[in-house]
Length: 589
Image (tube, rainbow, N blue to C red; front, side, top):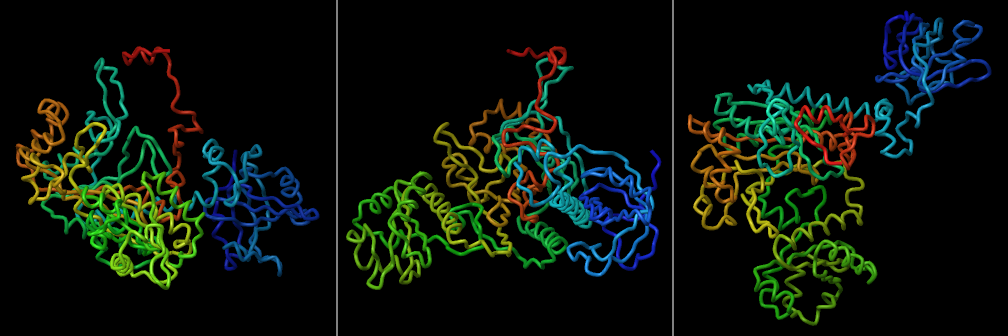
């Protein structure tokens, strides 16, 4: 079909174009017939322009325009005019002009879509994902993907200007134990053998450091076969970064430079540097989370010192067992009813707490069910530690340290929601969390696991405890957190094969398994591996936060559902028996 190529987009025309002959190509966004004159809002990804079909101006194009319906694809030729006085649309960039149509070509008709192509429509996510190609026409989704595109450009420009090399690593690799379940790909040529899709390019980027490429980055797809939620996908995108001959300070500085660039170019904000730092212990004790949200105050306070001599059984048992008594001050909530307090108690119990202790701050001290078990000095110490005032509410959880802190951290977020502390917050808060434990203990399997991954370097002062007491070992690891979301994580790496062998031993990985899974990396370390470290950003989550969205699915063109399905193309799907035979796989029906 012959048609003229556009001279302008649907967001270009302004009053300085009045009188010009133009060609526009796009979709019918809206059609209005007002007494014979037909008005069409014509849309492309750049914006909307009103075009006018008037029988006295051009009878032929007006006659054809009667066929137009929503989402028809059209091409028009016409003349730009100033809109008649009183008909201007201040909501559109093109709202002071429209186009009188001389020629109309219908390039394609369209069935009535299952939902309107509008931002403010109430439509289920399932329907949006089934017809994703229509959902992506909406202005909100187009803005999101354009924002993501800008991220890519800024990232590549920034790292290139800092002497980084972008290198692609394999998508088909060896299956290695990295924490999550691998996606496996059967080999047709090697019967019974499988590739794995990479959970990250971790081993490859370390090999690139051995190879002498001292500054590497990659915007890379990663794959993890794990249960999903709003901010998880089976395939996701990382900004992967590695550097040789560095320490933590160099990595912090490089990352902060990128964040400053992103905030400046995408938000018009001058990010204040350096970014605040908290150790893992500080983050847990003050906020009950290793990804603390600092957009509001309400810091938790430890009360161990205030009640160290208490005869109250719950406190006494907790202290004798090496636990913690953690508290939270809810300003102005001293008038909470017993019913409201019972709801909070049930919330804490669902998180695993044995109970929730509450105290109202009154003129004559603390009012609480346990008040009779506390001395006046203990009550006053609690008030002093929390800087509590009359009318405030004190919440207390006690128990095993990290479990109690995690429960109170969740309660802190719940109180922030109830008090609407983030309702009018437009300020983003970044924080580094550092000095993580190297290992975490799993009660179910009765063994240690790497908190980050098995190549994370221990703190030099803690190496002696690798074999004797792994719980005492801290890592040269760091996470970058934005508004309570981890957006990047990394570490300095082990680059010595003997130290790496000790790490594997602490994790219960035998020499045989280590050689089978990571022998190629260990062998590489024997040929002069430099000190190195890096970080990986969760790109999907970063863009989500910058866009003000709540699900990474709204920042990915064609995402999966929470059950890992693609509703649009109906994957995963069954394959033929012939395909399975080629892969030496027998399907059990």
